[in-house]
Image (cartoon, rainbow, N blue to C red; front, side, top):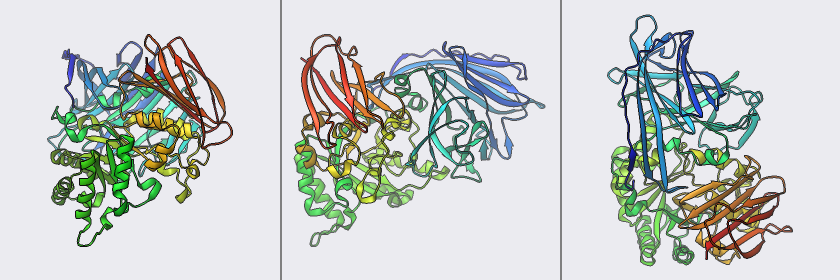
Length: 615
């Protein structure tokens, strides 16, 4: 990670005597958010309030270790407190992240004997609350269940994916009473309360543990291990991932929340993010428009990638079948990559996870990839993440860093902030992206999908959506400006685009397309946004602003206030929907200032993009 700048670190430890009983509790607050941790009838519980109103009803806590639920038959003991504040640089939707929280750690005691069973560690941020369990690492332990839950607020609307697997299912929206019961639901889950607040339920810092999903049981969402149904033996680090609730009044704070990353440790090597193989960039990817790569065509793909000004080219599944005379697939791969390096385009290659599963064979394989001249590796088709596969992600990240390869995990478990710890993880799939809007597989994304993702999955972390396809037959019910807007909304440090470079170069919007960055210095959610209906963003990179709007099912007229701009005049280049066809756009050039407002008409499934450069 680029240098971590400590603003202030103020830790104060206090042994606060606290007796857990039905009438006593301990509240932690940042002013607007208050978390109330307590014991009720011997059970560990918590609730959350925002501006004095309860937003998360009383919910159960606990983890079952060696056959005992450590959240039942308990009382709270002494606590220690710590406040912390830092800033650090991060390649994403903003340049610098503030990590500021108040932490309280309680001893959880057997209510009869007073024996310490575990510790409950909590952190409160200005946009949410997190907790985890600290276990006794000196003893053998089998973890079989968690009572960790979120009680469903009444009259709220929820957005979620039923099923876990690769985290690529369709989104469902419903109220709490209509939410599917008894089936696995993956995290994160976003909710809008009747009073206007937004909640997001998830986990952070998944490491040395099993991936958490939830099931609706009556009026609560209860956590469970979807891939370790009989539990798992845990060794090493004796803590669980963080259970997180983001709480905010508006979508801008929700989309810009960094709690998930802030709950993860910084990299052990602070210089890792500055390594050459960790640099953010745009990539062309041939699989979505063309299928398996053909060896004889690779120079043309590299040449057009260079013409676009992109930094990377991804060679996907199919290179293992390459042959050219006496050359095997590895020699062909080396030749192709050498050509890319000669013209200034770096290469990442696709591999199946089975090629790098075993620890003893993984490092030799990664070294061979590196020796071919590649700088990155896309690893695909991982099974659902049980305890052992979670450890695999960590071990593989460590090995890739050692060899000098960035990594893009596909067909993967959701990110949980570990990209802060391993900044060379430049992207991760775990999203229903553009692969699910492709005619050769009869796949079509609903119009509301892209208007949900920025306020649910994208809050969780980087996503390899593979956006922007201009090919007419692939549009189905989306417009060119909407496709272009995807490339801005769904950004990632390894920003992999899904159409042929020649198609991009021939498109009338190519000037903006070529200038889209992979990362940004600032991101703003515009007020016309509404989950499932419209996602509107303004993003800034090196003083240049981009506006991108994704519209849902219903046509609408929106107005954008440009007060986020600096002083002076800005040259605006914009493209809006052509009202009579999908594969067209309307270009407009003008000069604007921060006092101006843009009036935009959006088609069903339409979009809008503008670039504003200060004169």
